[in-house]
Image (cartoon, rainbow, N blue to C red; front, side, top):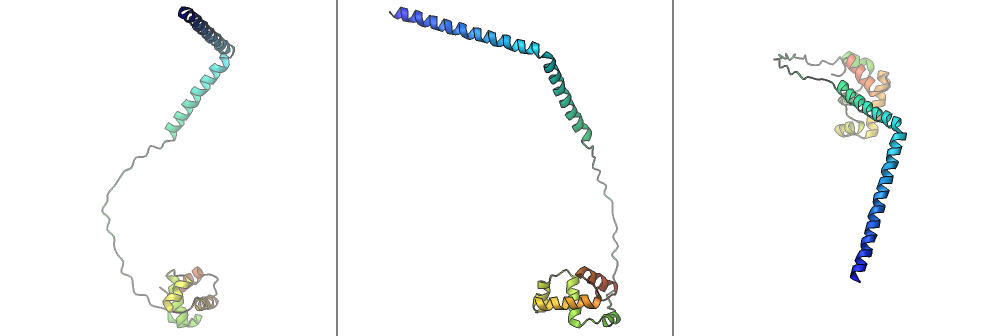
Amino acid sequence: MLKTIFIKNRLYILYGVSLALLLVLLKLLEIRFLIISYSLEIYIGFIAVIFTALGIWLAIKLMKPKVQTVVVEKEVLIEIEKKEPFIRDEEQTVLIGLSKREMEVLELMSTGLSNGEIAEKLFVSIATVKTHTNRIFEKMDVQRRTQAIEKAKRLKIIP
């Protein structure tokens, strides 16, 4: 009885293996048929892939800058110019009509401080600083801080 079960199982295994080999053979024939049928397209695609890779490689090689860093150390003599002390042109200040406080605000503006920072330095409110700033603009006939500072430097009112 055992022998007959073993023989039946052997036949099942033999049939299974033979069917698997037959399927593999059919798939190989199908692939071969596809390769033969589409050989020109496969050949063109293969060449396209090769030329694309070659183009990318060539572009990378050509576009890569060949930079050589040359370090040249030279001794440099720096002459420090002695600046003359700033002398305010009092005539221009009187002509424009700026008060002492407006001059202080203008000088602090030229250092780049904001209205709030100017208010803290002068111990006044921000509204007071804005009022002084508007009066400076009116008296100097300008629209912005940068214009006021540039004009004041040109007239030698501030350093």
